[in-house]
Length: 439
Image (cartoon, rainbow, N blue to C red; front, side, top):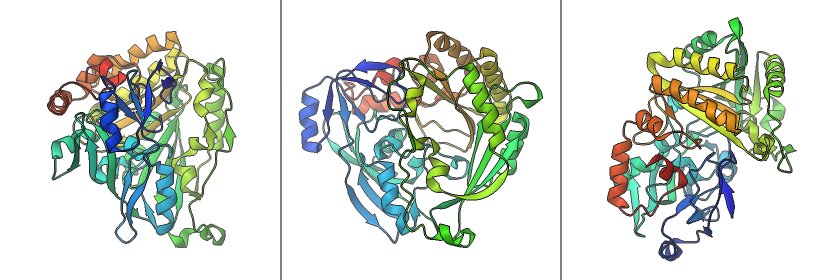
């Protein structure tokens, strides 16, 4: 079948199988030269694609244990984050880290070592994985943790599924008082003011900014900064206190068909940016966690608005004293191309994990571009800026980065290759991404 990531670029024909159990895995291994696991297909590029065999893990989705007193949960890695939330939130627990969508599997969260709006304080998802079971390329199943097979464990967090098939995981949850978020919205006139506010609010649990990347002059980098905290019971109105279970928000809007052309262009982006900046008036309010963490999940199949060619989500991180200069260069470049970016998001990151885990201390910016031939060429300019400032690309979003950029951005890449060689000398576990980047 023809498969792609969430960005719908690239798409390629892949042989597929559905993972059933560990015994069945030995049979699958014998039938193919190589394979990669695939959860719910929410990585954006070619990380979960292998033409020889792409192994669907979504049906491997049982909960194995949930201690409601300690907040420790164990599940198979085909479990969706949305289902985990539905189970644990009514009991007063919440994952310490969540990404921008809840329609991702637990295996995907681990493989990408996802970060959220609170990385500057809490780190990434892998920091809360207590242990995991991993099926290696020879069919052997091992348990990994910080004390057992620790190197393999560290390499699996952010390893994009290349150390083996993640079967199950134990995860440590955090206690919450309510399922609501207290949000503060601030209009910010420029990038410089935004970075100052990020630093001033560095103790806010959650912080994220939307940026108008087409604004210029004194308003260059104008933004909406959103700060959030888990609301306490005393902050809720009587009507909000009736929320005894998580709000299961079904998508309110749907893009029902694949569009022949992209609806995203210079003028539509410019209009949207102007309206969004003005509508998001400064305020403090209480909202349910779905609206705060997963706003795009309210639009079913929103990736279709970019048309048949799909889109590239370019997410990078720049660190240290270089951050302000690098971000200014990136926004200037985007503005000068005239294409803009429909989605432009900035977050502050803290220190990261090892090997191929993406986060490092600094700022990460996420930009969406239609996958047009001329746009793909222009992205080389962003690569040059990133290389100059020793930044790195997020592999879970990447679909086209040159190998040299990845080599320069991940200082432990050679150690990751050596570890993979030691446990999978025949490269039985591999993906289109790993082949493209020589991982």
